[in-house]
Image 1 (cartoon, rainbow, N blue to C red):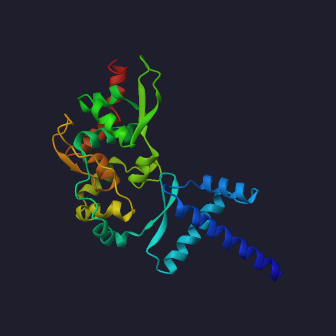
Image 2: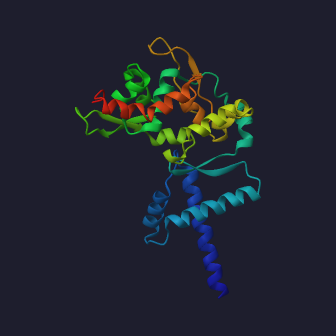
Image 3: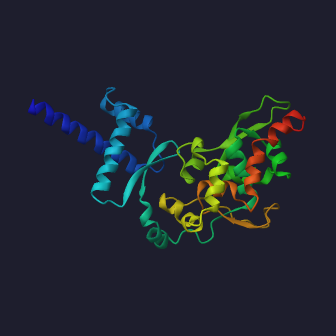
Length: 264
C-alpha cells in the first residue's frame, strides 16, 4: 500500500511539473484541451483530462501563494498563462518603461467597442451606429489582430461579419466575451473614485502590454487620443464622456437599421 501511495504521489508531482513547464514555455495562452492532447500524445494513453488540468493549475497557484512567489497562472483568452501578480506592476512598469505613448485613437476605440458588444456585426451596422465610415478603423483593428472576419451575413449582399480575436481577449485580460462588463458595470466603474488610480495599473498587473495605435494624420477620423491603459470596460466604452451611449446604441441601432433596410 505504501509503495502504491508513493507511486501515485510521484505521478501527481510529475504531471504537475509537466503542466507547469508547458505553461511556462508558451508564448501565448495554452488551452486546457491542448495541454491534455499534448500530454496524452507523449505519454501514449488517455490518462489526463481537462478537469485534471484545472485541478493541477489550482494546486500550482496554491503553492505559489504559500511560498510567496511573485507570479501565478492566469486564465486569459481561453487559455493559461504565467504572469506576475498585481502588486508588482509598478516595479515592472518602471523597469520596462511601458506605456508612455501606447494609445488607441478614438475612432479605433469606438469601433472596437461596437464590435466587442455586438459581434458578429457587419460594417454597415458599425457605420450606422457611429454615423461615419469605419473602413480605416476596421483595417487598423485587423492589422493589430484585435478584430477579424468571422463569416458573411445572410442579409442582402452577404456583407462580411466582424468579431474580436483571441488576441483581443488576451490583451484585455478576458477569459471569454462573456466576461465583458455590462453597461451598468462600466458606469459604476467610471464613477468609482479609485478608478483613475487603478486603471493605469490593470494591464501591467496582467503582465501584458496592450498593442496601441498612435493617432496621426493617417487617421482621418481622429479628433483626440484616448488612453487605453484602463480596465477592459472603460477602454471599450469610455471613448469620451458619452461613449456608454455608443455601446448601448450598438445593441439596438443595428437592429433598427436592418428593419429599415439600411444595412445590407
